[in-house]
Length: 487
Image: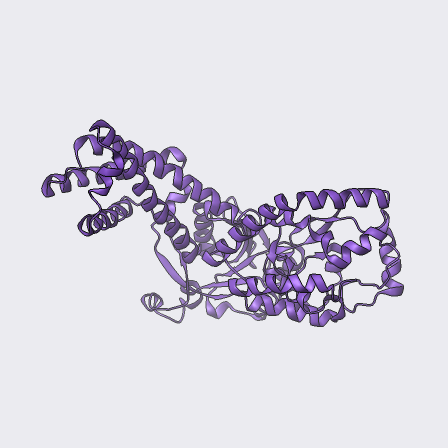
């Protein structure tokens, strides 16, 4: 569906292919030097020249161009089985080896000998296939939602609905899941689901987990119900997409749409793309998010190992202080309201959840949906220290490692607090992954009102930058040490 996501994936493939070819050439060079009884270091050193570097650059460019000609960067590649991909790589790399042989014979290049090229072909196939599988796995780990599955609803009817059903069937490995179609006729293509009428969709957005809504209607079909869908989706932070061919086909010549400059989506298995108007909130799958996710994985895994002794001591202290489990596991709502199990060190008595509603009714000191109370009678002695120092949050590094959370993002709300949100504009905070820390943590936490808290979360959503994440992480350290606003 998304042209820039497909482009991002194929850029990663091209980088992997170039690195794989260089590694394969080094391995083949080592085998060649062994066969010639010539030390590999001296063999390579003799060939380190500007001319050879330029030749290598030309060969790499030609190599990628040929792989592209063999359609190894087409969107359809993502749907191939490993056997099909391996066969395609064998053909393309074999053609490249023939090209290298022709260049070696024409330019009298000693290195590009028959023995070297015979070794290079299978080595490159194996290394390239392995690197592509690794890239595919890593990109799947950098997920937004349900392991990189975007839940989508399409507002369309008739032939347009059938066209989008075929598109989603083709793009399953691109990370899109079609929940179903919304239209007033009750029509749904074979194998898909009719979800309801246009007037039903606002309620669906509250009841279901929906990441994106595609409105594929002609401009003259826009009614007040469609306007309501757009406004409510925008308020909740749900991405709204308008494929321009469908929206403007009644008022704009189709050839003019190819000159539009908005976002783009893949229109067929060949990779042709069409423009679309997009209203989005938060971040989408792209290089910034991939880098953010890699940082999350690296930092969370490292800290879980380094802090393991401290976490064992905390677990022992909790056990000695009060009865009950070491960990407190609670249902929280994350990305677009997805429920997940959040892990914390237990800081309260075991029946704390049962006491919540009575305390909320009598002693809640926070306005809005959240509950906060000074000198909460449910908090244990060790728990009070853990809360003040924020050490109770350490097990959430596991949530970050799993992909439920990020290091930086709005704090996830409990199921009880989530149900109490009354301002629909506050739902836009769920259009990014929840985090361990954000502006709220470094700005006073419980000293702020609920409205101020929500405003800070939306500030983060609207200004997401990797550099800003780094600033928030660095500012969290003194904020935790001071314990300001931690109750």
